[in-house]
Structures are given as C-alpha cells and as structure tokens.
Image (tube, rainbow, N blue to C red; front, side):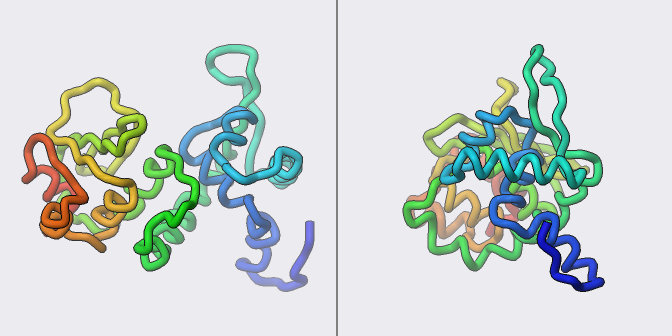
Length: 209
C-alpha cells in the first residue's frame, strides 16, 4: 500500500480507497454482495487482472470479505461493517457530482442498478416531507421501483406490487428530477418524461415543481 506519509485522516483513508476503481467496487457492493463475474459486468472497462488485484487488496485491508452466497456453494464478495460505513461519503460524492451529470452520458456506460444508490442519495437530503408511495422507473431496461417511506427512499427491481405511478424517460432525466436540477413541469413540456398513473404522487416523491 502506498503511503502519503501524513498523519491525517483523509490521507490515510485515501491510502485505502483512493486508488482507481476502489470506490466503484465499493459502490457495487453497497448495492448488493456480488460474485466476481457480477463485478466484472457491473464495472465496465475494468481489466479482470486489475479487479482481482483490487479485491485482494481491499480484502487484506478489511474493507471487503468473501462469503458463501445464499443459493449455494458460490463465493461472493461483501462489504465488512467498516467497509459499509463508506456509504455516507459515497452518497455525498454522488450529490456533489450533480453539476458534472447535467451534460448527460455522452456515450459513457450505464447500468440500471447504479440508480439504486444514486436516486436515494439525491432525494434523501432534498425531500423533507416524504410521502408513502411506490413509483416505477421505466427507461427501457429492467423496470425498477422507487419506494418512498417516512424513513427514506429505496430503489430496487420491481417486486410486482401495485405502483402509484410510473415515470418513463432516459436515466439522465430521472437523475435530473432526483437532484432537483430538472422540474417535472419542464420535463413534461420538453417531452423527455412521461407519467402513467397519479402525477401528484410523482411530484410529491421528487418534490418537483
């Protein structure tokens, strides 16, 4: 492990997670524990030998651990309790990234599961009066659902339960709504968002004008 040689909490934290790909590996494991091949799929652009090396390093440092998956004799990677404490700084970085996201994907890779971390991170500190509602997120890939409760927001695969409304649009526009960078009125006027069901629920969930 390379050292900055500084007795500073930030410097020592960066010695652990500051290398390229490390925080993105943590992002994937914050979404859910994952097998090696799932991490390869969820981290487009990473070399397999580099991923293997990063996993060994993070495991030796106590950030991640190997465990048996629930479905059988398959090893998967998961965050340790200490590693899971990276959720808050990662969510803060997601919120900080809003000005960098407004220009859209520009050809970059995208995985639907990334919204599972980004949308709650954006909404949690912005929406104060949380309704109790479930909103579908449909952008042409696997459908997701955004569940809003008084305790917070949660995004995951649609579990088949009844939806109060469904929002259809490109991921960039859904992120814009969640960040408050795009109003629902403008999104509807420009034709970049479509809504099925109760529009007032969508406005409440996204605190959208």
